[in-house]
Each structure stands twice: as structure tokens, then as C-alpha cells.
Length: 234
Image (tube, rainbow, N blue to C red):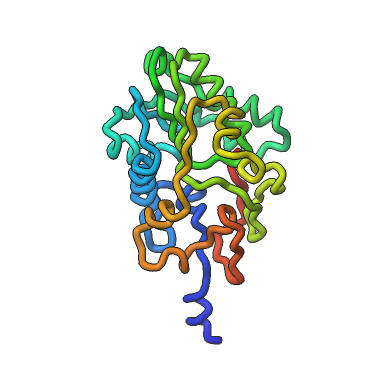
């Protein structure tokens, strides 16, 4: 097989567009920012909800939340403020340190959240433990309802191609239904973008053939393409 044939059959990591890549990046020839905004619009179509305000989990959820707000007509606001002096908490060695890091990293804006039905948009939900802490934080700031919307399908399988994913037992979607996960993270409703919706958000020809979606469906490609070994969020 020629190198050109290898390149054609190479599967590119869809999680780059969901989370890893910077929003100002052009990944595999496509704008990460535009892909995330489109995914937010699709998410709003697939899981509509009535709310008072759409807020992102910063920073990787911002573009997706903007798309959700545009499609739904619900106003966008920064109801969580991130401290940029705290690094990515998911790489810490224990859950207790990760949870403490979330409290240092994010602060709720009570004036935006108090008494409101809040639509929270995040990039992904892996273990669920960090999402639970964030929901507690938003509820503690006075939110009346919390509707969590996720810009990635349920993560049900580990990645063996360089991403430092937890064991499958730690992946909340591998053992819990959407309703059970919603109860665990303490939100009123939970909606994930579909696998088909996420692929459509990249806006390219034959996305099913082009991108690896093994972490969502367990279909592992023989020739994956990733940038560098990375870790995933909680």
C-alpha cells in the first residue's frame, strides 16, 4: 500500500475538535471554533430546553455554548469565571485533588445564576465527578434549575491510541443511563450531542470514514492519527 493510501485511510481524532485543540486552531483542515459553534447549534436542536440563561463551563465549553444560545434564543452569559492561574485539574493524581482544584479554578457569578433556570454547556462528561462539583457550585449560587448539555456523545470506551483515558469502569456512561448520570451529577436534565450530530458539526465529506469515534462507540480504527498523547477531562 502506498503512503498516499495510508493517508486516505488514516482516522483523525474527533476529540481534538471537542476538547483538546485550542479554539483558534485549524485542526485537520477545519476551524475548531466553527466546529464547536456548530456542535452547539446541533445540540440545541437535539436537546431543546426552556431556560433563562446559557452558561459555558470555561474555557473549552464557550464556543459550544455560544452556538447553543444562538440556536435556542436563550441569552448567553459567563455564569462561571475561570481562574487562569490554575491548570487543568483532570491531570491531578487523585480525585480529592481534582475536586479541590475545581473549587480554585471556577467561581460562580451569583447575580447571573440566582433564581434562574440555567442551561450549562460543557465540552464532555467522562467520570462525572467534576461535573457534580460544578452543579453543586451553581446550585449553591442560587440556580432554580440546572439543565446540563454536553458537546460530545457519552464516552463509553477507553482510548488506546495515546489519550490517557480512565479504565472503562471509571467512565460513567459505560455503566449508567442518561437519567442515572443526571442524578449522579445533580442536574435536572441532561442531554448529549449524538455521534452523528458531532460528526456533522465538522462540516466535511464522509466524516464517518475520516474521524475516529472509538471512545463513543468502541469501533477502533487500525490507523489512528493523533497529535500528542493527552489526558481527558473528568
